Image (tube, rainbow, N blue to C red; front, top):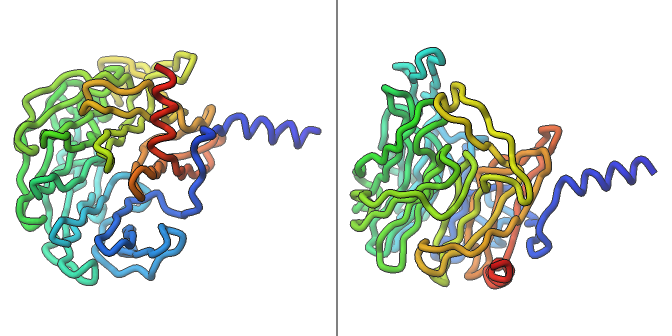
Length: 365
């Protein structure tokens, strides 16, 4: 009886929406659908290919040093219309995080660089390995090719005086050979997890770009670029309440936007707020990371459908989502950090369908 009871308690603490099914794969991504129909992914051992949607993978082809498999959203893949594969990654070979808690400032030797490398032959060989952004940068949740052929990534960067994070986009008009940076988006703040953090990115139906930004301000903030990510001049709070945790947004083949994120509070309750400290020195903030929710937008992010909780790890951690449209209307969601109440790994890899989940979301409006 006791064993059954404990098992029931465990199952209650780990809940998955009935419209979701667990994927039988062993990777959290990033994934790339190649022009020949295969999938690709990459880790510290190299790039791998699959002809059966990730159930098995080829032996890896070495690409570069510096990829950290344990840090979610620290590397991403894009294949351009012309077939070039571009890898953008945080280079951990020279990683060094130093922070002065008393001053609230990063050390002079604080470093995590963004690098890129590309392949012109389907991943067999790689060229132009180069640093794109120096200093200390962290996880990025947007990396796309726009309808114009521009490659754009949304990034965060550690700034000083006061120590905080700011965000921008970097972009390439020659398939990753050279890179440029936009203006900085600075929302203020003070702390090694404060400011504007870990942005995600999608193209809108009219060619503008939408960025959603993690903050400690009880919601995601948003920025709009009218020139393909060169400048961001429309910056405001988004309609989406959120804890201090990143979101992942993509544009689906249908044209809808989908976002997966941690809301400000768990469904039906209020989450305790973390008091000011080295993370964010000036304000308290919600660090709710027990639930992942999903929402859709049919009007380019002006409004979003009512959020639906797709997974819950009660007293656990479920955050840093990755979203991939494996086939039109078939959405994969994985969690970069997924730990049970004992802080043991408990991977989350889900398949859901756009039509079903959109219908479920609208039914709650």
